[in-house]
Length: 278
Image 1 (tube, rainbow, N blue to C red):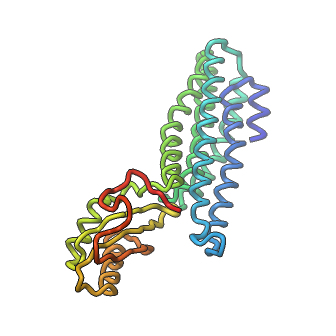
Image 2 (image 1 turned 135 degrees about the vertical axis):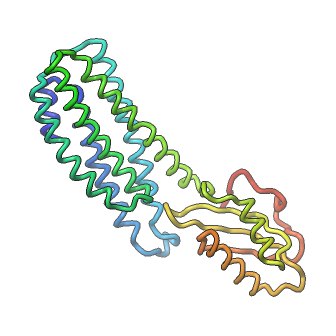
């Protein structure tokens, strides 16, 4: 990062300076991701009864937002440079960009061996991928300038790197924000879940007040009401319901309210648009 920043100033290369700025936030992003992984492994306690898993999601959200700010800054600087081209030292850009590319390839390979389904790891990997692309863009820009002398290639390739990063960054922010807002998991169809329980467990007459949310990237929690027939064995219904939830949906933490008469809670017959929890 320090070498790229100093070299970018000396060579007057936006691609190198932008990549160095990206690396600065990436150092913080990787530190945040590492801390989140370690802290989230702590067991639940009296203050955090669900544990610390959501810290991974929070780290993902922060890293995704940081990426978007970086993209906006690089894009602004690139447009300024396109309007007012500046002579650059292409040879210096080539050497420094090559060193940056080698380092980023090693870090990217290390992160790629991590859990690809973990949003926190994905966010950290995306930061490094952005650096890798930035270094590659700097090398290409240097070669084009050396061969043709065409200066706009430096900011143009910076914009290309931004375009490659922004879609994934938006996706990470959107997914992590959905979990932080306690939205239902995107893979879970609540209507299908209700039908499955009503069909597979004969004693259940109706399933309502279904609320699902995620504590972290992997664990889904559920609360629901089950209206059962008067002669139903409540213990058996609970056991069978939890078995179906675990087997079919992977939900192992469920709170189920058994009802024999009509539900007295407000809005039982409706599936709310949002989850309200006290």
